[in-house]
Image (cartoon, rainbow, N blue to C red; front, side, top):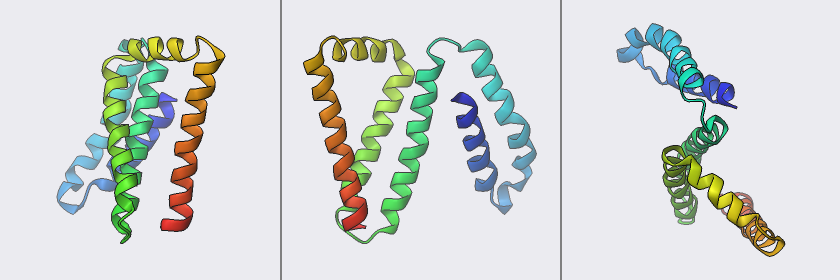
Length: 135
């Protein structure tokens, strides 16, 4: 998963370099793979959780960009949700062991697990409904 994140980050950073930052493209081409290799090499603890947090940050950026293009006042729901994702991703990156403990608590019995899945499915249905009907 970290390889997918590395490719997406490389693509975004390479195409974000405008004409005044064109000098940085060779640094991006070489620097991003080296940076992610260092993460793989030296940050092996909870690597999948941290990769998931990086994906959350990338998706949150896309959510905010898409919401900015909309004229609907309901775009603030998606924007707020994206910022909640950013804060969650930061928390996951800083303390991935807390995520392990939280998942252990949620999965401790069937009732908690079903409740968490119901909340997730409801939030997903609301976001799909907003995407279909509000945007």
